[in-house]
Length: 62
Image (cartoon, rainbow, N blue to C red):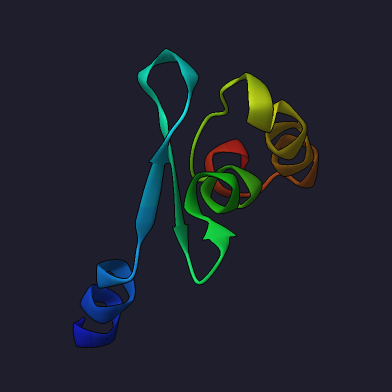
């Protein structure tokens, strides 16, 4: 748990349109990662990643 907390202390979030933010840790887009792994539903800019997760039947799409 300690390493998890340390990792998220390094998270940087930047505002985007429509009141959303893009959050990154070590340069990785956390939202994109969650969608790609089937752990979250996508907004418009992550639709392709959600489709891949659905096709692979992972995460929410199992």
